[in-house]
Length: 187
Image 1 (cartoon, rainbow, N blue to C red):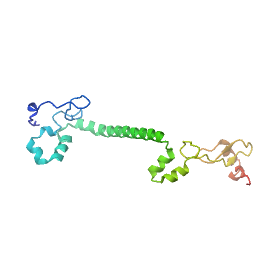
Image 2 (image 1 turned 90 degrees about the horizontal axis):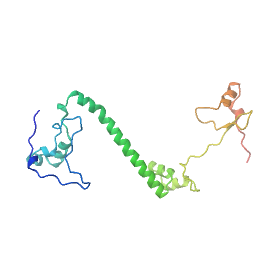
Image 3 (image 1 turned 180 degrees about the vertical axis):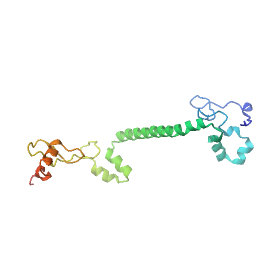
């Protein structure tokens, strides 16, 4: 492996950044040897001008992975997707926290936010939003449609995968759903 001569000893130190830390060139990830990463400071001025500024930035971000040992590559193969997933989850959490805070400040209901993300008009979202200022997400309570023929206080709306035991017992005894249907009030 060859090393590239740089003119770093002749350069003055970099000025401090606004946060007070010294402005240092990007460092390679910890499992990489320090001489594997090629930075734009490693290239001569002629090479930078010949390649152009865009390719110099690409060289600053590129690592020569062909020279890495297999065990380091194996670690990178596993760790890079995990780190990308962690960063994405952190960015999403920050985004949702910001949206939640802004929606609270602006008194926007979750239904309005969902409508905006779905591309629906604000008028439709406002029409669905409760007039009493309730901040629910717009779902409503489903009325019960079945009751236990032996005990009318036991009721169910018939939705969902798990049915009440009295419902299953009535069907097992030869009853039908129609027997358990709550009669509609004549209006």
